[in-house]
Image 1 (tube, rainbow, N blue to C red):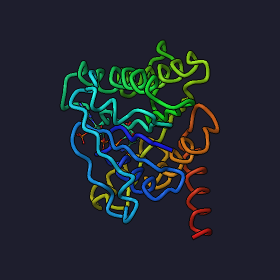
Image 2 (image 1 turned 60 degrees about the vertical axis):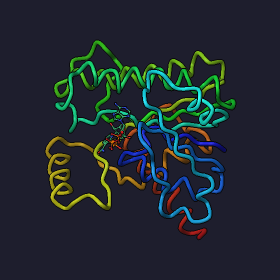
Image 3 (image 1 turned 180 degrees about the horizontal axis):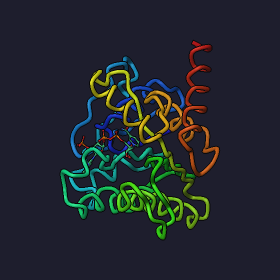
Image 4 (image 1 turned 90 degrees about the horizontal axis):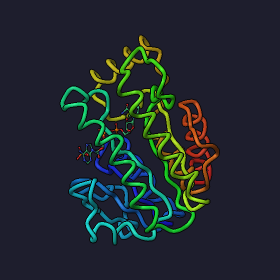
Length: 240
Ligand SMILES: NC(=O)c1ccc[n+]([C@@H]2O[C@H](COP(=O)([O-])OP(=O)(O)OC[C@H]3O[C@@H](n4cnc5c(N)ncnc54)[C@H](OP(=O)(O)O)[C@@H]3O)[C@@H](O)[C@H]2O)c1
């Protein structure tokens, strides 16, 4: 299968690419980002599966980029502004990146894709789909991410089976290479705020398993990402 990883230069995507490159079910891996993505350093002879696709404007895909995306069976969408970067830009720009790029991305990829086209949208535990709700923390951002989730699910529902979609809603994502000061800060924040936690290798494995084998539901809560991710990783370990 041909898998697109959108937002390929990011933290979660780096682990998704690292796992996907050696997954035998994935025969072609397209790393889509606004700048070049390096081939994962564990690729070995599977480096031939890897292509870096550079899209300068996610509101307007060039014909060259569309050619690189054509024929895909699935996409894991990881483009977003994370909460720690919210204050670095006006909220209109956050809306454009988190919502408009996602809407336009799925609408651009689906007609070029194989059928069914599986689309996994990663947001977060606090993304709220009900736009009438009042959120006590990050109200505008939580609703924005929830709207993006809902739009992806609505797009799939209206596609007559051409698109299958799901959403991943992780809490805090921990990584092995997080500097210890940041790791401690993350642990304190997640404990104080009561955020659940998932390891980056677990969420990556869970999302890959969903796009490769089919989604178990249209929503993967943090606990689902941990459960599915651990199961996949354990079975890979025991068959190695
Ligand atoms: N990290 C966590 O603890 C955490 C927790 C819960 C949920 N999540 C969610 O998981 C997903 C991935 O998060 P992450 O931590 O991997 O984020 P990240 O490291 O910040 O990566 C974000 C990706 O989006 C791209 N991007 C940002 N602005 C862009 C723009 N204007 N145009 C094109 N691309 C743009 C970045 O490209 P550049 O590299 O070029 O900037 C990068 O590829 C997000 O939806 C996030 O909300 C993350």
